[in-house]
Length: 271
Image (cartoon, rainbow, N blue to C red; front, side, top):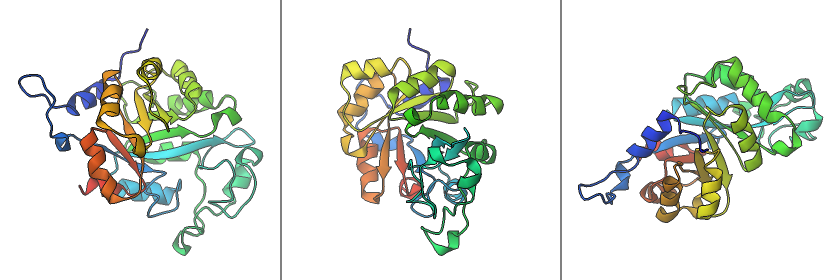
C-alpha cells in the first residue's frame, strides 16, 4: 500500500499548481514557490561539504543544504562527495579505508582558496547539530553499496535527535541507489525520501518508486513540463540538479519544478 505523503509535501504540491475556474492549469508558473537547495552547501562560494559552505548557504537563506554522506573505516558517518579524498582534501585514499581520526586531520578547504585553509570534513552528527532548526537538510547517501548498514546508521542519528517525526519536514534523504532509498524508507517511513535520476522515467517507473519516494530529482537537462507533470501526477515532487548558471533558473521554474539544487543559491533567491 502506498504511504501517505507528509502534510508539508501535500501543501507544497498544491501550492505549486494554480488552477483557473474551468479547471485548467494556469500558464503562469512563475508565481509558484520554488525551494532553493544549496548543493554541497553554497559550493560556488566556499569549499563543498564544509561548514563554511553550509554557513554561507544559510546566510543566503537557502531552504535546504544538500550534503553527501559516506562511512569511515570505523563506522562513523562523514560528509564528503567523492569516494576518495584526493580531489577535495590534501590527503589520499578511499573514505572507507580511513578512520574518522585520519579524515579529521585533512585540510578540506585549501584547494578552494587560501582563506579556507584548515576547513575540516564534518560528520553527519556535526551538521545535524549545527543546522537543525536553521535550514532544511537534504541528505544524499553516496555509494551506499560500499557501506552496508549505512541506512540504519543515518536513521539512528536522526532518531537520536527527534528528527524522524512526520511534522519535522526539514529532512529529506535521497540517493541514486533506489534500493538504498527503499531500505531507508522501510526503517523511517515518516522521513521524506527522493530518488536521483539521470534519465527520464517511464510512468511505470514513476508508479514503482512512488511506493517509497516523495521526490523524483532529475538532472536539469531532463526537465520538461511533461516530465514534471507526470512526476506530480504520481504524487511526488521534483527537485532538479545541478544549476551552475543563472540563465537556467527561469526555464526550470517555468517547467514547474518544486526545487532547484544549485551551487549558487543567490541565482534562485534573486529571481
